[in-house]
Image 1: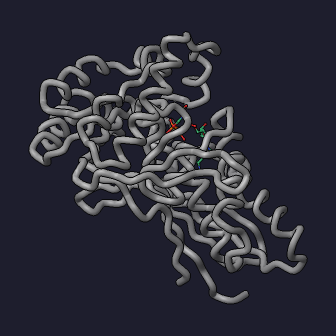
Image 2: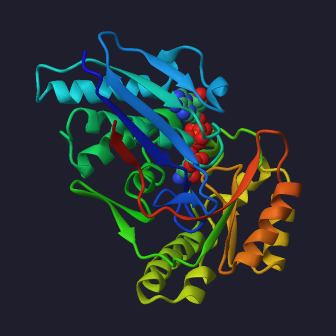
Amino acid sequence: MSGEMVRAYAPASTGNVSLGFDLLGAALKPIDGSLLGDEVEVFASEHFDIQVKGRFAHKLPSDPKDNILYHCHQHFIAKLTERQKELVPCAMVLYKNLPIGSGLGSSASSVVAALHALNSFYHEPFNHDEMLLMMGELEGQISGSVHYDNVAPCYLGGLVLMAEQAERIAVQLPVFEEWYWVVCYSGIKVSTSEARKILPQQVSLKNTLTFGRQLGVFVHALHCGDRKLAASVMHDVIAEPYRKALLPGFDAARQFANDNQALAFGISGSGPTVFAVCDNLDAAQRINQWLSQHYIQNADGFSHICQLDPQGSTATRV
Ligand SMILES: Nc1ncnc2c1ncn2[C@@H]1O[C@H](COP(=O)(O)OP(=O)(O)O)[C@@H](O)[C@H]1O
Ligand SMILES: N[C@@H](CCOP(=O)(O)O)C(=O)O
């Protein structure tokens, strides 16, 4: 076997961004330069194998077949074998850096890092949309339904709106580069599939109209650079009213953020991570410090001041 290896990194992401349930998501990058995302290595090997390392490795199922990486590999190789018969076999290592059930797109990060690394290892047989379709399908196996608001920003970078058209799964939106996104993970686990089950299947006419208006106005405001208008419509009428009951300290955290110049505050994905958007670093630091002291529940929790990660996942051949 050759010594060829690919290493991929896939950033944490925030799904929904309050106003775009399942339709809007953003990739995150801590401003202090720390890595907030999973990494996957793929290398040539006679026998397929998955090793799991990293801060949150011990929280994953012990059977490698229950790791989403196993299913990513199976799925990718099955698709590739339809086009190419002779394949160099490989093995994988996952550095599980993101907490599971955190609202930071943890499973999406593993899926994107794994599929990006595999695509790069096998010399890019699949294009961006084919990759996104695969990523959505794999993420859907875990969370209970196909939604792209974590995998798409994680893969493409920036702030991403789902188009869900056959040849245009997602579109990147303009961003306000000076916005800071404080993200605080409390340390408890909230299962995405459970947090989806508690949502009602029907949405009232009033909330449907609010949802449509907010999303339309937000996209317009991004395109014309109107920060105030964009921030004014960042309210969650779909999930937050139900999910906040799963998040101890949520109302106090929102109150502090609102009283300290946050432009917006909400649940990241299905929680328990919360996010606050600020347009100045002083306010972001104040909120970050308060959340670290008051919202975190145990030693697994953490808080970061982030900006949006414009690059998304990366893969390097080493
Ligand atoms: N590589 C992986 N990364 C994250 N979760 C994984 C992975 N492999 C399997 N899982 C399982 O998938 C589920 C992910 O839970 P979920 O609430 O969707 O997490 P998140 O919202 O953080 O992506 C957990 O039951 C976890 O054990
Ligand atoms: N749109 C999804 C996002 C889930 O994000 P996660 O990071 O909690 O997996 C939802 O709100 O269910």
